[in-house]
Image 1 (cartoon, rainbow, N blue to C red):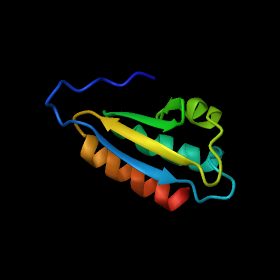
Image 2: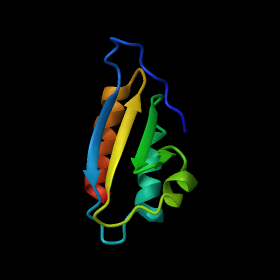
Image 3: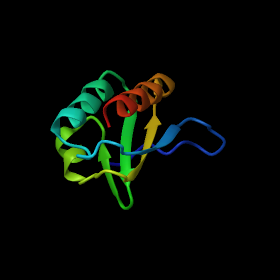
Amino acid sequence: MKLAVPEKGDDRMRSFVYVITDRAGIHARPAGIVVKEAKKYDSEIKVSLGEKSADAKRLTELMSMGIRYGDEIAVEVIGEDEAAACSAIETVMKGNL
C-alpha cells in the first residue's frame, strides 16, 4: 500500500505505535473490528511491522502480516479526517489487541 506523501512543510499525517497485548496476536475477530472501524473514515490508514505494511481497510492484508503478541506495530493515517481516524483506530486497538 502506498500512502500519499505530504508536501514539504505540510504537517498532515497522524501516527502512533502500539504493542500487541492479545496473546493470540492479530486474528480474525480483532482484525475484523479494526477493518470495520477503518472503513468509517476517508483517510488512508496503514499498519506496519518492520518491512511489511497493510491497508487497515483490507482484512486479508492485515491478517497476512502475521502480527503476534508483543509485536510493535506502527499506524499511519493520512487524509481529511485523519485526527478522528487515528484516535478511533488507536482506541479500537487498545480495546481489542
